Each structure stands twice: as C-alpha cells, then as structure tokens.
Length: 287
Length: 155
Image 1 (cartoon, rainbow over the protein chains, first blue to last red):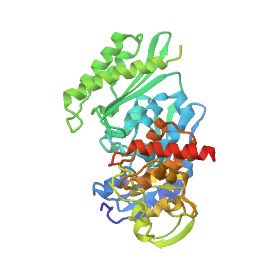
Image 2 (image 1 turned 90 degrees about the vertical axis):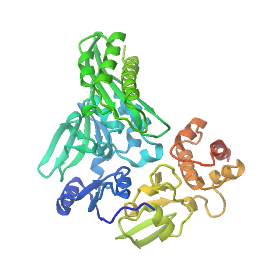
Image 3 (image 1 turned 60 degrees about the horizontal axis):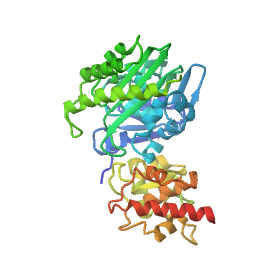
Image 4 (image 1 turned 180 degrees about the vertical axis):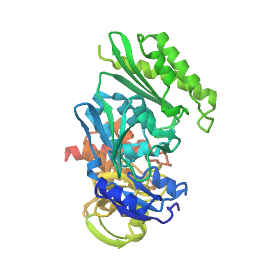
C-alpha cells in the first residue's frame, strides 16, 4: 500500500489566506491543487512536505476568461476546464491539442493547469505549449504580484522561479492573430510524451512575423527551440524554411536516453514533429 | 482531523489522518468495499468514484479533500429498488469477467451518459481511456454502455 508520510493539512479559502498559511507553516509547507503530481510523489517519498495548503476552495483562482488583451487561465482551472473552453480553443488550438493528450479524462477532471506548470515536469505538455505561446505567469507573494514570462518560469526539471511563500495566480496569453498546433508521440493512450512539439505562427502579408516552438521531453532549455524560432521569423512559411527549423530544433535540443527511446531517435522525432507541428499550424492559419 | 463527507446521500463524520486516501476512507472507515483499490498510481481507474458529480481517481485524492463534499460510489448507483441502466447493461452484455475494474467503469459510464445521453463508441472509449480491464473485455464494456444509453433513450 502506498500512503504518504504524515503531514499537517489546512484548507485555504482565499489567496490571502493561502499566503498567510504558507508563511505560518514555514518553508516545508507546499500548496496542493489537484494533487495528481504531488500525491504520487509523496507516496513514493520523492516529496515529503510537512504541511499541505489545499487551494481547491480558492474560487478566485478558478475559471478561464478573456479580458481586453489576454486569455486568462486561473491557476486552479482543471485540465478538463481548459479542454472545454471554447474561447481557449478558438484563439489557441495548441491548448486543446495539448490538453487532449494529457493523461486521461478522469485525471483531467482533477489535475490543474497551474499545478502542472508549478510541477515543471520535463515531460509535462503545458510547459512547452505556454512557452511557445509566450504566455505570462502572474505570481502572488506577501509583497504583491509579479509577472514572469513562461519562458523564464522554468529553471530546470521540477524547478521554477517560485519562491517559498508565493503562489501562481493565473496564466495570461496575449490575444493576437496566430495559428498553432501541438503534436505528441506517446507509447499508449494517456502516457507521458516520448516527445512533443508545439508550434505558434503569426503571419502577416505572407511573412512570418513571430514564431514560437515549444519542445516537451527533449531536454530543451526553457522548453523552447530558440534557434528554430529565429530562423522562422522574417520569411515566408515555405517547405525549406520549416525543414530548416526542424533541423535546428533537432540539433539544439538535448534529449536523454530512457525507456521511451535512445537519443538519436528522440532527436529525429524533435525535428520531424517540429516540421509537422508547423504544417498543422499553418493549415489552421486564416486566409 | 474531523471531516464530514456525504457518501451516497448519507452524512458521515469521522476523525481521520490527513494522509488517509479517499479510497481507503471509503473501504476501511465506511466499509464501502465496492470501490476497488488497484495500482495506487492513478493509472488503472478501478478506484473511480464521483466527487461532487465528477469522476476522480480516489487513490489520488485525500479523504480530507472530500470534507464538506458529496461522494457517490458504486453502492449508490442503483436506487435501492433496482439496478441503474448502466449496471443492467453490464448484465445484459456480459460487460464484466473478473469484475475488478467494473465499479470504476460504471461510475465513469454513469457520468458520461449524464453529460451525453447518446455517445458514440469512440466517445465511450475516450471516456474510459484512463481505466484498465485486464481481462481485456473492452468490447463488451462499450456494448454495455451503449445498451444503457439506448435503454435510457427509450424509457
């Protein structure tokens, strides 16, 4: 039987309350949202917090909305909420592509968008999707809020810039004309990615004005293929340009060999998926 | 920690350790052993129950997280007088062999039909994609849920 070690438990009722509890319980207290990453790690003793601050009742963190400039996703939005959000799917199909292949419908009912990002698992799908979208993360701490680019949020595997005493409030994706897609290769339904790529393109007058390429499980720094993005920007969306972007993504990522495949296979996959995600995104471009 | 959880329309008050998982709370504290305990890693889905009407894997939810909430288990699926159409469908279509995955399958099926009374086979398979039948009886499970959908539509 897998059971976590003992811990103290408090339910927060607001963000202020959660911040106060984090302060009171000290550096060994952690926030729990859906718990679908944290509880399994606690069962395996890979995580052993002394206190859990439960934010499931913090309703101000729930929900998905569109405001003047951004798609705003509350940190407590469940994966199922994001997948059901017509607004999210209409503006950024990459998010629905990614959500459709995260775990399974039952896990998506409980797991949260914010929890996935804060977990920063290198094989987790939304980190690359939001990095490709150049989203911003709004973090609240005792001193107030600060905004961090998704690309700057991830320090390394399972590490983010969140300080103790801070919590993620929401994710903001700037609204703009764009086309996007996310493609994943996995071994079976609901599994972690062997590798996956998200592509976001803004095209104006036949020229790519902005490109985002997010890489999942390929060991890419900050989850992005920056060299491929640089190559894409400023020219037309052609076969040659996409092929070179794939080559650059493949060359610059740093996959590791594991039970899901050797390095050369994963490098090949990074290049191929980059090209295919770009084509899929382009096929969705308006006009 | 003292919690109050409504399970199948009955309110239970219990003192529990925060680390107690919902699946063990249901089975060991309340004696509701219809909810099975399988992989312990939120993969297999035998422990699926409805929490506030939404199916979740109860091996990955703390009992304290269910404080003040409504849980529905397989014991609460029928109305006491007869079987739920989902249960009847499993009877009619041989939807179970060893029966280990069955309660979780049924709780997800009930939720699916409450949302979509006429799901395609593909919709059913997608809804069940986080649940394993190691007898590999998926064909009959899908048929059982279709039977329930058709039966509910005509009744």
